[in-house]
Image (cartoon, rainbow, N blue to C red; front, side, top):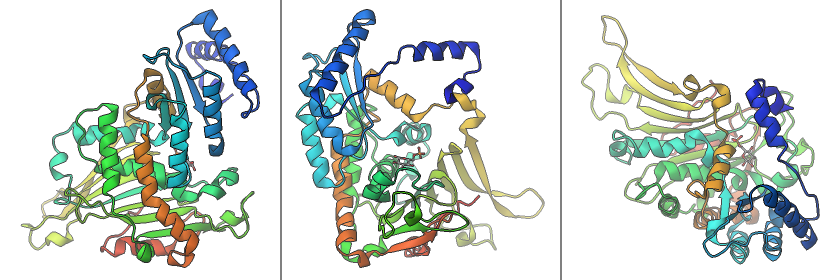
Length: 438
Ligand code: BG6
């Protein structure tokens, strides 16, 4: 019905009807080989009628612990067998989470590879399909003006925020096992960080891009476990303004210690980023839905505009708005019109909506599914980056479990910007979080 109401025009209605007429389904038990054989017969029926050499995508949006079993039965039933040249192709899309720690991710990978070749595996992170996330690479590497200033020489700090106004909703079963670090940090947040901070790849080929992402993740300084609370703050939303607290949500344990908010201060130990703090925060039930990457440049070293001192001038800030107001903005200092010398901040704002109609705005999944059909893995995750992300975060998860006092779970009011303790993280470097309440 949602699609239908969007499809008001005749042409669109025709496309929708034609699309829907091609859909059929086979129901069965995940764990029974018979289901896969039935599915195989059904696919063959479709293919023999229309397209005998068709490629196939198997999209696993299933509970994570069933993934290996399903792939193993897809293998046993011959559904994912390709000939030696990989034609007709058989691709398997796998939704996160890829394991729940380093060990389980490695095990999952061994199991997947015992059935599939790497070129058949499409580990999906829908953030990589978002227009603005893809634009990070274009902005950095298709423009001359950013690369020379993209380092510790000119950048003061980088902040990545992914805030959601929704709570856990009806996903408590999954989320209680996962929490925000696994649900958002291990994947979306670290993927965005790698795109912002990685070196220039040799080409825009899948492996060149993914090699650089893996190198970047490898350069992130491990969190010092003994001093964890100076680097990571975790929180859980509490009831406020008529909104339920996390532990009152359906399916959540009353004494749940699952975090719904995480903020981190991290450093990248390489030449480019020496000493530049990266602040990452992500949470549920926050002030509003907003995802953005803000790059704050250093202040000018000297001001000729006496009596205005260099330290009194606001720094340049480049903001990549990932959602909901997709776009880019750059804040600069400029003279305010008038006879006097008055300086003020001016923001140059580009919004995708100014060049695209709402319905033209591509959905992340559309782009990723198309890439999967075309056999382009650039925007899909390779296993080594997953393992590097887990190498960084597994010690944190273990510390939270074994010694919770090291990094206490702070409550924050639903609808706020996280626990008070979060302000201490940037303040250690005399920074503050960006104000996002606008
Ligand atoms: C998913 C997480 O990967 O991303 C969800 O599992 C989260 O918990 C969602 O709500 C956010 O995606 P988006 O595109 O709405 O920012």
